[in-house]
View (tube, rainbow, N blue to C red):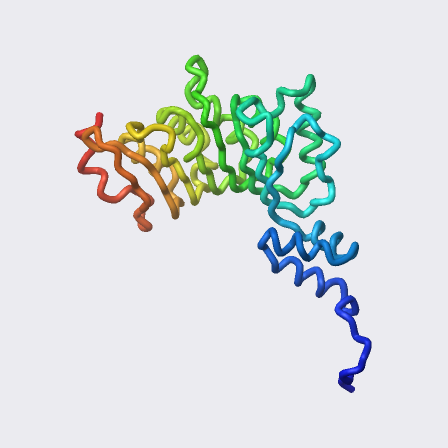
Length: 258
């Protein structure tokens, strides 16, 4: 029999499984934060169902690192301070810090991180080998003496399940990417999204033969965002031929940008 208007049925009477599903459907951060303030039970539910988290603050203050977000799959470390410095170099044993991050967030498959040097990515990528989506951030200049592609090699070494790569906010040379893509054919084949727009320089971009080389190695690309040079002019590209994964409308310009 249906409960009357005067029944004492409360929202807390909803089974925990259903309530957990309701929390999982809410993705807006401020709404989730408001929900977590209702009571302790809701706080615990919010923490246990959170899927996305951006960490802020000083990486040296490890005692402030939350350990209650075990279900987080998307983790943004790019806002941690001291900003612009190698993320893990604040510690005498950076591997321990990387392991501590993995312990706090064991379910991460999507990562945004500020990478000042290859060591940061080497340590972090090895902790989350199941990474599928990665965005690298770096506004500082690339170390000129570093071998070509050395910034990206650790990611391709440790993350065989990579599907999406965004280096649009990562200061590097255009020649860094093609050799790494070619050296890891299995990962290149699995890539479906690639963002190689160049925001660090208005006069920097990929040459068409470099883009053709990249897409030839990545036959399953469904989305490609790129900055390329045609006759010395910067152009923007956001399309891939669905039939063969090749760039459309670029081949005829190959003689202009060599």
